[in-house]
View 1 (cartoon, rainbow, N blue to C red):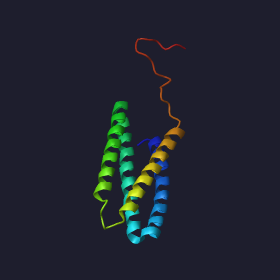
View 2: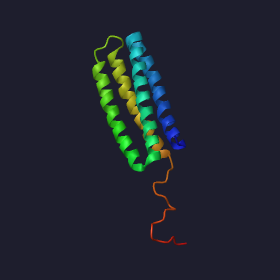
View 3: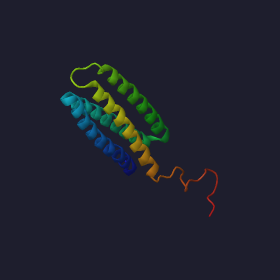
View 4: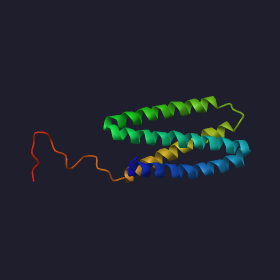
Length: 141
């Protein structure tokens, strides 16, 4: 994992954990222990899914730019489908408060995504290699 990837992961994970802690407290105050448990499970789901995605894209970036793009799109699609399936599957659970779980997943996803966007905007990466040479042409000095 490159330094930029670690920076993106930290920039997204830390605000999500802070918002998740607030969600756990609010869920506990509103719905008791089951609300807090639902918020913790929702926060764990968001943290695991998005962390795995960052690692997968980071690994694919070492293979090729095309693999990185494919990995990003596939991991996003898988995350959306699995999160929707989890929200649907656990919508009627009695183990925890489903509303606290759902709201924590939604808010955690928004905060994580905003953290990633902010990190990418602040990262100063070259999109074009200024030292690249075109085959068949000599480099002009």
